[in-house]
Length: 138
Length: 138
Length: 138
Image 1 (tube, rainbow over the protein chains, first blue to last red):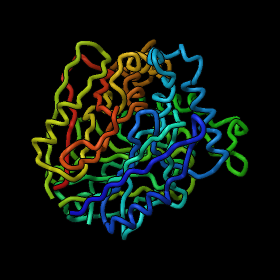
Image 2: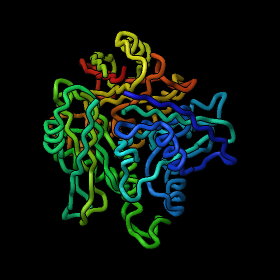
Image 3: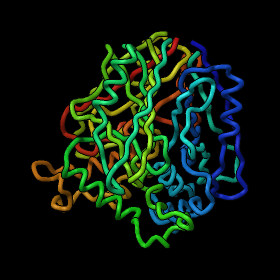
Image 4: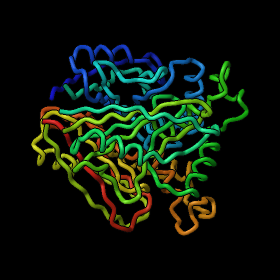
């Protein structure tokens, strides 16, 4: 069994941002040399997400609006977590979107349907944060 | 390390449907010959879900009602994604229900609690769509 | 390839409770002797959750309030599932919080960011329920 590990770093210019990281994850897989196995990709911070969906800007705007309805950023006093922080909403938004994805690796490729793309979902940005890529297989 | 891969195809007669696919996934596991490892089962489409819950029709009706409250299908104009499509709600419903499950394989069986069953959640059906089963182990 | 399996049991004194189980999961990893691989931790019941977030009591109160908004416990008649049971809300709350986490194992440790902790989320407690830890690697 082989294993591979890499951290991807992000520093968004806005508080919330969705970034297609499929090319970076594919580069990790190529570098690993693993052709059959499982790939884990997870946010290492609890106010960010890694998820799979469509790379379509209208949908991304829908996500922004929808997450603000389900877990509004303001008023900050809405959340008990916001004593010393202002990111209570980000913990909840990340919960909806998910921490991680597990992807099959087949013949050295991400084994994806036609529209599957991996996204980093930042909900409390403007600072350096990490995503972990771990691959096991052979 | 051994690996196994299979696609399961579905074509629902209604837009939304929850299908117990546990028997099909168990058949994959038996065919794989793997007795210890991890099994990944994921929707290959971004408007469908694979999740684990109870096979109880009242609960399934509750899911339908609840998901329509959280991410209503109509009016279609509610979602920016719906320029050329009408399935913006399905992307959000699938996000709530999840893309994938990872299940432990122990002694050649799905290592489940008493009520755990695997479901395909279709939120934009009436066409052929796929689920991936990938198993690694030995 | 090595594999390891253990069940963790819980019996909460209240209907809903969030428990930091990171120490128990780390003990499993140490016992397994596995240094590189993937660790799966999942609820074996469909009214409970395993998830990763921050060990901060204000946030945990926010989760309680938020989940009650998204899927209220009462009136019990709100859910069709509640014919013979009263836990329809718990199935939905667990869906939001997630069934499982998959964690990278690197150099014999849970490969975590600084604030990542594993929680058992109980939404229908006061009885003995289980979590599964399965590790594969070498």
